[in-house]
Length: 263
Image 1 (cartoon, helix red, strand yellow):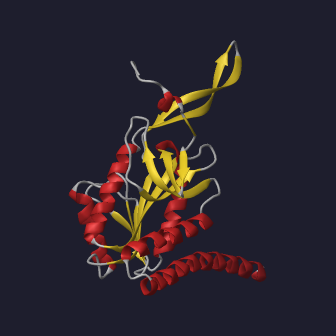
Image 2 (image 1 turned 90 degrees about the vertical axis):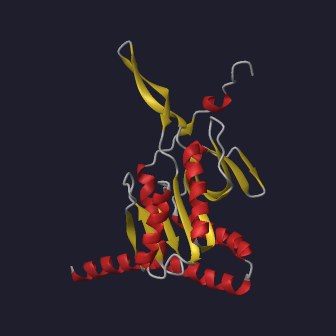
Image 3 (image 1 turned 135 degrees about the vertical axis):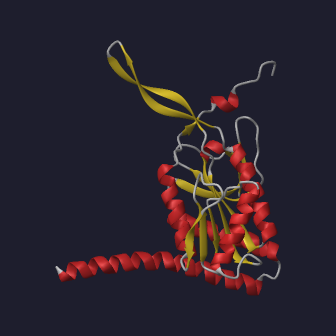
């Protein structure tokens, strides 16, 4: 009995150590970028690839990772998005060219804005992009399986469904400037930014500080949760838990293909 309990504890420790190792990998890459890439723009592009690689390892295989633009059936379009986590089971991107894709919003689970250095200005720019994306995602069109009774017989049918929950949105930065230097001050500055125009972001992770802060939904003024010490681990946990209550089905092509009158 004692041996069995010890084995269980070892497995738990190994699991935590694996996730911690992913965080150490990102931290090591950040330090290399700081030494080898003096231009922040170049560091940002390489940073995207590092985060994509880590997310690819930890997310379920029904999701894929890419970069691109997201659009809706009513013609709204997002800005170029650093990282798009999209469904690769029921759907696929509309177009893929040179590593950048065009995504119907119905296919998108979450997005990540990647920053080399997160400042108040960069935080505001990211939140503006996120609010634009949330507007794009306010009406998602799906075809879902259902049942219909005809002549006392049950048969399978396809039902059109509109969902109004936008994709989830995160910000990941290798470092911050002017938002700390302590976790409490970071959260204070983040809340103030969120409350300026009731912006929304599901989580912000600062790698070199090992911080993560997420926002509770439907609470105004903004209320945050999170901690220092396990930033990347908390980010991954939040992304993984979020998929459990975020529905993605086959997109309703008719919402995009129906011709306008007189067209």
